[in-house]
Image (cartoon, rainbow, N blue to C red; front, side):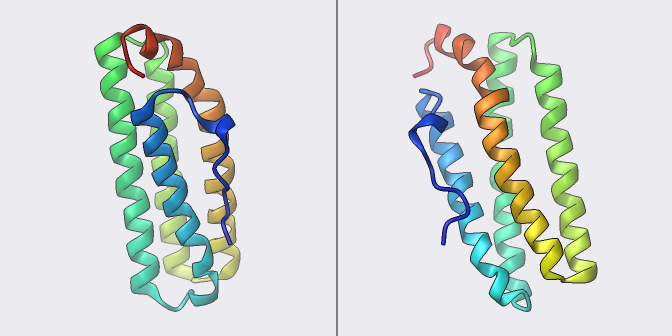
Length: 136
């Protein structure tokens, strides 16, 4: 079962960014079925780390273009990236301490809501500037 089904409306029309968003969705969708195996700490930890690492890679890509293209909203956007990282770290700590399905499902709900909101709102704002500078 997929937590997030990729839809055409999530695409920004910038191949590099769209591919990264699709990869993040794929990682999130591998995390969700882990709810039946919460005791498999190694597998769960591996997916959470991959999600963390890939989100960092994706954010670095966006932030590189913010700097390169002088994106005027970069400070606020980068702050949201920091808040996301902080929230994920807190979820990882909470889960490590409690290992409860409630924490796990709250994490999944957060990931689903945050990424869909972020793509459709925050990321969509930089699209005209990125395209103006030749990204497709």
